[in-house]
Length: 294
Image 1 (spheres, one colour):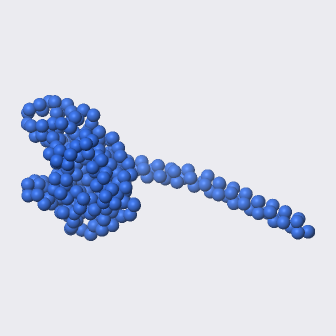
Image 2 (spheres, helix red, strand yellow):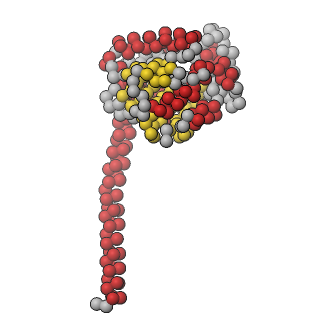
Image 3 (tube, helix red, strand yellow):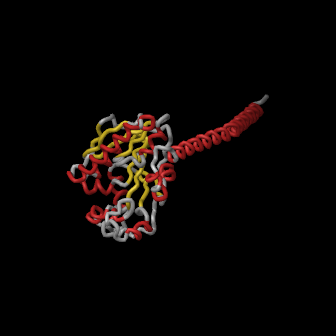
């Protein structure tokens, strides 16, 4: 065989080998992709079922369930990318409205940490401490539901009570940003959350939403915060905005109430004055944002 013939033969063999490799790759892909897709779908369905079970569980009171129509817990937690095997830190749980869902959801495969907030302002700190004591009693009274929950504190940007650095898949905070602005601790807290998350971990934020252009003092007085303000400060702490959602939007809320956001349910700070009007509005218009730690 001459050189030219040998080269043609080698080239033909190479093309045959490449074609065979391609066919094998296609065959493997054809075999594995449906299986992987089915597995992912089954995992997602199982997670959704588990979340449904947590939301529908007996640990939640009728009073708490009444807020579901405004707070959309399933859709909100799914938007935050929650899964039952994650390590999650909830900030300032208050009475535990979301804790009642997160604790059973994460009990078997994940881990839930709670950071009770300690304000540097005495009036805020006194309110928080009274609520926190009730929260701790609730956890202690139901170990089957809350026995795996670890509780620590957040004060002036410092997390204590557990090792927080780089260990969390998710940090979640619900309707707390306005207090941290008033307290002067927003930036320090956001930096603490960034430090607490694993690379690729995410911060989920739900907050009362002010109309664009509201001043910082207006935010403090009303409890409503502009979306741009939250995004700006989260980015300054090192976060990247991953997504925003209108899950918790409320077009009926004008945000210009005499007692700010506290005019609305469930607080009704104005008592019986215009109560029916505020009840018809429902809970506040809210931003729902997801940030990632690169």
